[in-house]
Length: 549
Image: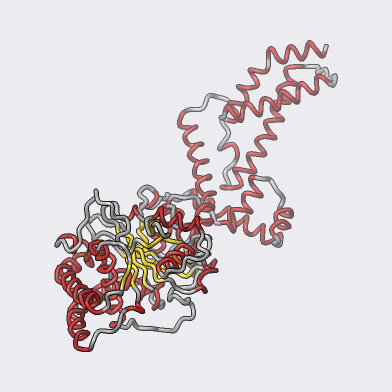
């Protein structure tokens, strides 16, 4: 008897059960799960010896009972969110219209959207209660909260979800058109490569940009970028820990300057008006100084670069000395003294970092080539060992920057300095090999020697007063031009300081000094006038490298 009933059920009822469940749930996946559950209940009962008096009625009674339990579970997960009865989501026995399906999908989509933008204070409790079906007591115990607090948050979350579902939320422009931000860092990295390890993603850059333009809550930033709140909160927490952002009440603020495209265009335009005269004056001062050194201090340098290659580093170093003189001549106002600066004059950061950062909105107009200045990269635990006077200007012109490594390690720079001083004892072969591959040294019959400009301060002597005065008169003309441009940059920065950075004098000074960048413009003008020359076919790997001892 049992076998016959099982055969009758499998042959005549399984397909009908599936379509019954499909009409009730509106989902083939859910219909498959529900019909399998019903079939399991029926087959289990039959194998235990159940012989119903009215088989068909018995089968459909079990089906309706199991469906009712499924509907109750859906009621917990859906209707408590928005107060809608489960029947609003249930499809009737008659075939649903396309409009019915669209409405149901849209309602569920709104619900999922709001779950993505509810804050973590509520989201964890909501998911635990409505999705994971955990009790208030269990949730309260796991979170270390009073049960009343959990109930209150659940009540508040329901209101938030209902309000959100009725809103026509719109993502911001950055959600479909993310921007890039150029960044310049000054100082020393943290032990994990900070800050660059946080800034290699569009998400982090656009969070910085959005919060710089308008300090915002995590929810507002999520909408602006079109990113679900759990991911936004995690990224914001990392940026705050890295001191790239700070939280003021419920709003996040970017903790660095980001210079607008409009300000950059004005700076570039002003710089163009002085570049020709400024470059020629710097060259005149450099040639005056070099001529005197060659005639009076013949051992002031060593190295095996031709003078045409040395001029690249000498020129850029002269530009830096001029820039520092211009910045130092105009004192930035201080509203308070800060103890947050490290020995190299930059802000102390987590994990041994000491750096400052300036961001730039991307430009559509031509700008001078970027010239960075990289020295020996010192890990936090190496900074007590002292400074090494190695400089490598990274010149983004043609393929020059790609011909030198990003930086030398402290040990590599120390080895280079030891070779330049004639101290060859105990040098590590693997480091000598790397420096040779980089091109900073070359192997000779008697050992190794530097291939770059090495300046010896101990082998120079001061210019006589009358000679120094002539040099200074030339240099002063250049400084006047540079000071005027720096003042122009400074005024623009002060016009666009956001309120949340107005009381940070160090960041203001750093922004003014970094925006005031002369290297690229001077370099391009020197190339235009053939004071320095470059050919892509020439083997000139070490342009802009210099070691001062």
